[in-house]
Length: 329
Ligand SMILES: Cc1cc2nc3c(=O)[nH]c(=O)nc-3n(C[C@H](O)[C@H](O)[C@H](O)COP(=O)(O)OP(=O)(O)OC[C@H]3O[C@@H](n4cnc5c(N)ncnc54)[C@H](O)[C@@H]3O)c2cc1C
Image 1: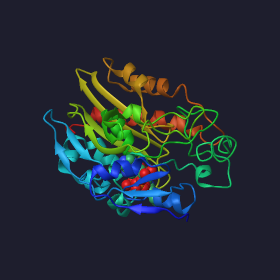
Image 2: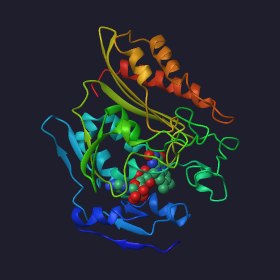
Image 3: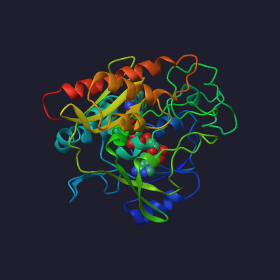
Image 4: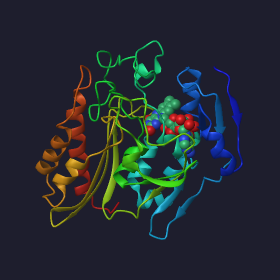
């Protein structure tokens, strides 16, 4: 491992200037960063441990939403009674990720910025424009079963790995940031960037930006759930996942949110499907038409074409489940 300095600041006044120094990374739970440092993929000169900062509370907001501190652990968030009862899709997404031990360590801020699991990103002998800009993309002609089909480019087809972010996309969460330029709020849709020609630029943060919280808007009236399709029933990343909320009145869709995981270069908000569904009939053929429209722009490669049908089928199945569910979720 390359040598680096380590500090654990007690307050924002010292943390943010330290984080803004060149080649510096913040350390949350370390479950992604430390692995990448061991593999020689992340090579920071300085590591700023933020676990001494007061960012581990989940607070009620006056508008009925919640403010989740960036250091809240994934397992704490999943188990919080307010999350379980008012934002079920988020609790289910958290519980579907990683393992119990990892969720006990992993933080909300770190989950937002976790990096792709594309095997060529992890293989330092392979070409990867995300890891080494301009080196090429071995996934295009290589083993690309886990790669994305939406939002991809000729430079990168890596899938975004987070389950939590898919639920946050459906919930329209807002990310709170404190950085060298002061505090600001970023819509979750604007946090992650599509790869385009610069897949190494993964988010809209600038050096020194510290994620301090995730704000959840007031709960939806709709029922919600998260379904993850994967090779094993536990401890595996999504091939396809769907975060969905659906409200039906008089057989018409009155509210719908859809997020997709495993298929997108970033956490994918299925806006075209939502547009087609809203106000229309709550029936299986409408769900199928909406799912097919969302996946129509998919760009598939040799091993991942199956994700298109799998995503369509999973969207339809989840919407059917929500429209049939008798209990309010
Ligand atoms: C074996 C294994 C299986 C996994 N399976 C899944 C899965 O199925 N689904 C899933 O979603 N995830 C999965 N994960 C990933 C896991 O969710 C992430 O590793 C974890 O969420 C990262 O959180 P962390 O606090 O440990 O982040 P860290 O490793 O500490 O940091 C990750 C990144 O975020 C940055 N960072 C951290 N906190 C902040 C902050 N507050 N502000 C600014 N930058 C910050 C760091 O600098 C770093 O770049 C798995 C991980 C492992 C090791």
